[in-house]
Structure formats: structure tokens, C-alpha cells
Length: 462
Image 1 (cartoon, helix red, strand yellow):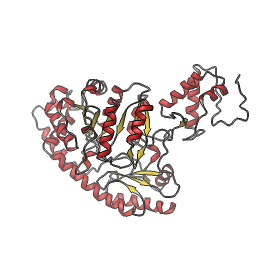
Image 2 (cartoon, rainbow, N blue to C red):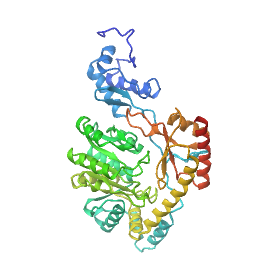
Image 3 (cartoon, rainbow, N blue to C red):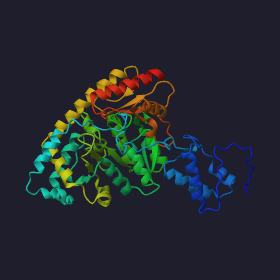
Image 4 (tube, rainbow, N blue to C red):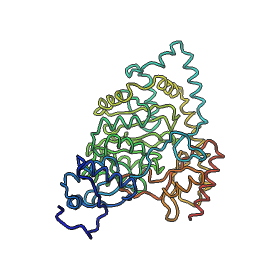
């Protein structure tokens, strides 16, 4: 029997469980997950202290701890040292942003899709490739040892993004998401913790959840990761590394200053932390800033994805890996992929070496600027963060409406945007904001149509 009476005792959660179902901690974690998903425990709710809950349920403390840990590894709970355990703000959000089918009857301004009117250089390269007499090699397995000149192409692209590396550091992956998954799978064990921004790329969240790697929010200063908060996490949160998007941060569209990049790199070296630098958007800027990797090349796994700068269908990423991590990440990539597509690897390399990638990037940039002019025209009275060369913006909402509420309202009016709740991490409070994908609509006219609707909604709630 419980030691204390809980008849009139205030507790945020008083579960009833069937103790005949074993193991009991799994039954309790199932009940906790169910109550969160059914809305009985709202995001941000502080759960009872584990000792109190153990007393209330007449269970061992270890049973409660194991149940909480199981839900924490699923991203449903966030434990803060000295403060307690909370229902994560993103527990109910959908982090899978690219839907299986194109949304019907909606102007798509949710998923970050580059414009599709800039691909002629790729078509010309592809036509040239299929004229080769030994074209069959494009449809076989690729071998890492036979791609030296393709690695030279990777060096050229990475240099264009603000980082100097060498061929002995280069690995190929089937896109940025694939590279992130391989990196976490090789460098982390289930239960390990990594630090991220308070709002971060949902693909990182889904991979971490799949691998039972906990992501810990690190506080920001003006949408840049705080170096002091990072150092505090190194000392007290038992993290193994951090994940960063320094340029065109997804979703907040912010840039990390060169000064902050240098300080973050120094802290990583001091505490032997790895950094995953996601460089998916570096090339959108005409003059990219120096990469974090340039300040700590022995700590940083630098991922140069081609999906946003060249084409999403070019499922390829170049990964510059420090020697201490190369063997383990290489094995993880082999286990996930065996090899990358020789067809795509050759197409990417030829496009880079011929400098046609510069034409592609410039055409994308021109489209981004045109579309952002429309965005700016309709949002002059509102705070909308982001650069005119970027493919998404971060709209801070007026009044008291939440991002999730605005996302629902916009969808009812025919426009898809994504709320801050989809990007928030753990117990961080989400911005009252939505991410607007600038290039997802098929035409400039559709961008304007979507912005007319969003502007009307903003005026109604202001």
C-alpha cells in the first residue's frame, strides 16, 4: 500500500495501470504515452516527482525511472536537471514534413522544395553520359576506391561552401539525411545525448528517435546557439556532440556569426565534442561565411548535401570526416547503403567539374530573390526573418495565436505552412511562428496567391 494518502493531493498525473501485465514499467510507459497522445497530458506539463509517483502507485522507484526513460527516448518527455520531467512541447507534432503525395487543394508552402525551373544543365550532362560506350557502369555497384576524381569534385564544392578539406577525408552518402543517420548510428549508442538548437531540423529529430539518441535543446541568443549554454551542456548534460545549421538555419532562417562559429569550435575542442555541421544551404549565399569545420577540422563532420543547392532528386551528399571518426562512419554508410548510385555520383561530379553547378546555383538564387520580393511585399507589417536568397522564412505571428493554430487556420484557407511546434525540441517553448517555404509553390503567381491568403489571415488576427 502507498505510504501516504493521495486522496486530496495535487498531482498532474494519477495513472491507473494493470499490474498483472509484466513488465510493469512497460505497461506504465504505454499508459504515459497513451495519455500524452490522447491529450490528457498537454505539452509542457510537469510530471510528478518519480518518488511521489512510486509511492502513489505502490511501485519501486526503478520501475518509474525505467518507464520515464522509455518515453524520454521516444521524445515524449524532457528531463531537466534540477527542474523535473516535462511532457515535451513537440510530443504531438508531426516531424515528417514531406508528405507521401502532393497536398490537394492546398498551395504548398510547407516543405522546403527548391524551384524546379533550373535543371537544364543537369539534363545536358545526363544526355552526354548516356552517349558513353560503357554506359552500363552507371547501373552497377559503385566502389569507393574508384572515385578519386569524383572526390576532387567534392573538394571543389565544399571549398565553394567555405571549407578547405582533402580527398582522404571524403565519404559519399545518399543525401544529407542519410549522412546524419550514419553519423549518429556510428558515434552514438542508445541513450546517448547530443545538443541542438531549441528549434531544429525535423529530420534530425526523427533519426535520433529511431536510434534512441536523446536530443537536448541548447539555449539561443538572437537565434544563434549560445556558447555559454553549449559549454554548460558539456559540463552538466553529458552530451557527446552537437548538431548545427550555421547558414539559413532550418527553420529560423538565421545565420551564425563567424565570431560565434569560432567560439563554438573552441568549446568543442576543449571538451572533445563532435559537431555535425549541416551545410545543406551554404551555397545559397553568394559569399558563404567560413564553415565551423574550418575552425575545428578534427571535431567537425561537415555534410554538403546537394538537394537544396542543386536538385532534391540528386540524392547525394559529400561528407568531410575527421580521421578519428572516418572508419566508423564509413562502416555505417556501407551498412545503410552498400554504395551510392554511380549514376548520380557521376552526374554530380561532371556538373561540378564543368562549373555548371554555378549556373544551377545562380538560377536558384535568382528564383529565390524573385519569390522573396513577393513575400516581403505582403509581410511589410510583420516580423519575417530570413535572407532574400533563402528558400524559407520564419514568420513571427502577431497577437497570441500559436504556430499550430495558425497552421490549421491557413490550411482551412488553402495554404500549407509549418508551425514552430514541428521544429521545437524537448521542453523548449516554441516560438509563436510558422515557417514559410518560398520555393515550394510551382509558380510565382501561386506564391502571390498564397501570400494574399496569409496576409488576410494575419490582418484578421492582428
